[in-house]
Amino acid sequence: MKNVTDSFVSLGHWPFAGSFGFNTDILATNPINLSVVLGVLIFFGKGVLSDLLDNRKQRILNTIRNSEELRGGAIEQLENARVRLRKIEIEADQFRVNGYSEIEREKWNLINSTDKTLEQLENYKNETIHFEQERAITQVRQRIFQQALKGALETLNSRLTNELHLRTISANIGMFGTMK
Image (tube, helix red, strand yellow):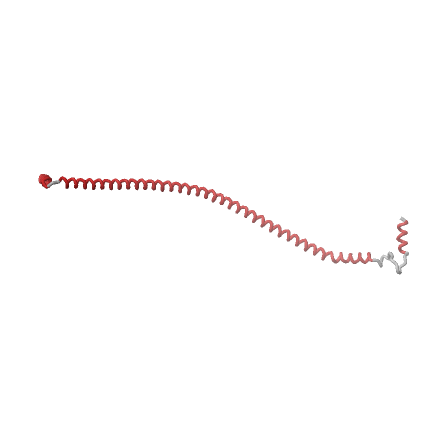
């Protein structure tokens, strides 16, 4: 320990002029000046510093509070959006199911309507065929009748003599006379 004390004492014997040395004069050194300045700064600056820190703390707390409020609002909006999404998904499913059932119903209506239309067309076709058959039969009958009449007239004209003609007229007049 004596060595350590001797080294400090020997430091005090260094010459002052022109060399670097350690000043052991406690009043002339900077640590005292610095401690006085720091003490004054701490004494008078403590209030300012605490006010600055309190203001900063309040701003941080306000920012956190605002962030929490915004977060709560965002969470509420998110929940509302999820509820709306669920409702829309349910409605979409209902529209999809209703749409499929509506499509199925329209398909069966179209099939039934087409069946009825085909049945009506089949009936119309059958009626048309029957009508055309009747008309053809009527035309054939008329031609046969006309040909038969023509043949009968030709036969009558070719075989009818004046005497036969007079006898036929007299027989017809006799029939009319008996009818009265």
